[in-house]
View 1: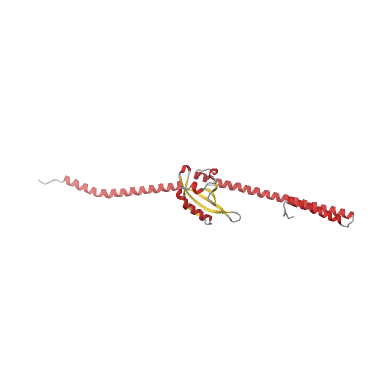
View 2: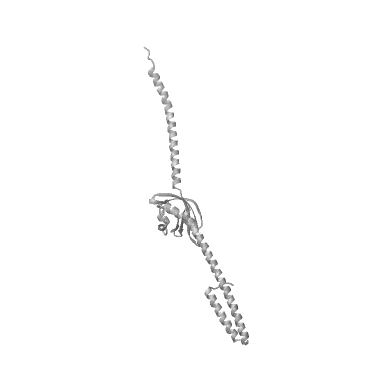
Length: 239
């Protein structure tokens, strides 16, 4: 049984067919007994068709319900992964407004999801000096060019600057229309601070070695001069 109409219309169509066929049979010239048998057979056939149709609708509805439950379950799993993953995940509309914001994004920027949704990402979460460069990156992403390894400063908790390293790609709907972009980023602030600390320590070590070398070079001629002075002082003047 093919289901090409909503259930209520199919049932109405079955009722109309039943009435029209019964009326047509009654107008025929068949004997009353034959007519009654024909009507009984016809109604039984229609009842059987109706039973098959009802079963088909029931099965169809159960399949749809199971599909919806599976999709809902997958959606919950997806939401859970997005929420708990260790990277910041931020989805922006074509206009650059926040549409998705997970827990790590909350930590990096010091702003809850409720507060972040709907805000202009460039204006509200990046320092002014980053607006033009990152805005140009967003234009390229929306045009279809994925971005990998982009690094920029973002405004963190209490206005402190944090370094964000991120990848991004554009989002499209079922019709192929661009709906925005999604960013996945890592807070590399501590890593950069550690690298800068190591660089400073190496620089100080180099300066210390250079100073020690200079002191050695200076001490060598001074030692010779000191020896000469001692010799002159101890020298006996002839009478």
